[in-house]
Image (cartoon, rainbow, N blue to C red; front, side, top):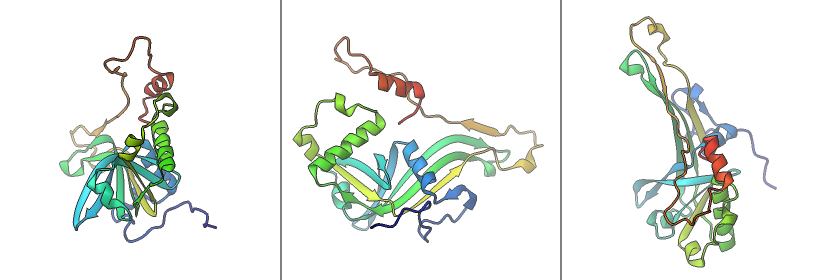
Length: 224
């Protein structure tokens, strides 16, 4: 029997926060919150001694993070059983201080470490892709035509068990209160990323309306 999960990921020399310690966290809840808040991640590999970082969409299921891509990708073909580092970042605002030195940004970020595994079983791959689709657009998988065997073969799905992880967050005004009396405007310019109005694809037959779950997602303003 596997031991129960702890509230925190282990703190190691690789994952510990070295600067701005109050901004860092190894708590599972904090790491998962960042991973779940943004659909885009960057996965770092070392292939033939050279570093590569590729952007891709990801999804989390428990303590596992999944990503996918073309089965023809040399990165994905080489990644199996390879240590990888997956990162996510969200920019929440520009922080303007009284000096250039103290300018900053408000952000949320997560860095997770693990070993890349490939989903080989066709049924398991299909289920992973179904979970992926519905995690972004609830209920959409069942409204689509089924994937063809060739499409499934052309798609690679990888996953990693999160072995170590760190979240880091900055949220607040400029860190220069001792200079508040200077005649310089200071504050935060918030940055927001949200869904906008849907744009129908050419050729969609008349009478095919935007599904209500997608309309609700747009109204919520959330990316997922």
